[in-house]
Image (cartoon, rainbow over all chains, first blue to last red; front, side):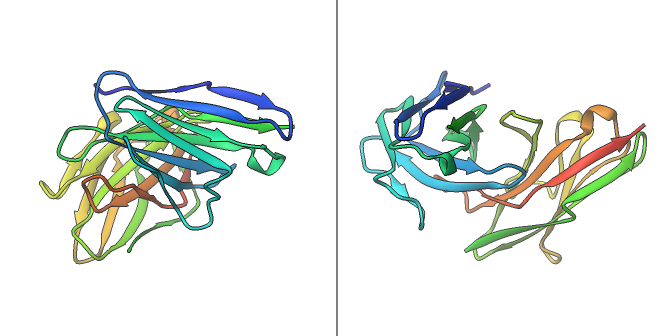
Length: 115
Length: 113
């Protein structure tokens, strides 16, 4: 089946630094990838839609200058949290559109902790 | 616009008992509906999905869900709960195509021995 990987799975960084999270579709090409954020004991909230070769579309309330998304190839999207603060600590999950009738595959998530 | 309401943030059942997790949706277009399971500190695993074919959908691990348009519901059931079913369950809706999923708030399932 289709597999989506995320790297790193966990990251701890200091406040003010930037962190890059990678989302890869391992055995299929994805023109569209999505980035979600999940707060503890909460649901997933869509942050942005990432389309290969074009600018990401951000949801209302998501700072595009803080959460930089790049979808440079059909198998890779990256989310960079710039100038991270403790309130950015969260579980970030990506998903990629597959080629089936309707298939969306989720990555295993990245736990970000900002100290 | 689409939305999902999961009734009950926490459901507790005895091992071997019926599992029923409720999900109601709102959608302005024919919906695609999903149930996902999430174990602690892990990503989402797809249990099953409805994509306008059969209204009774069978998924993995013995779960199934029935799409009822008249009730705008997509409840998840399993005849006999197992300890390993204890997890967080999310219902989600989408408009299909390259559109994102809209998730419910989740229901935590506890299974009591």
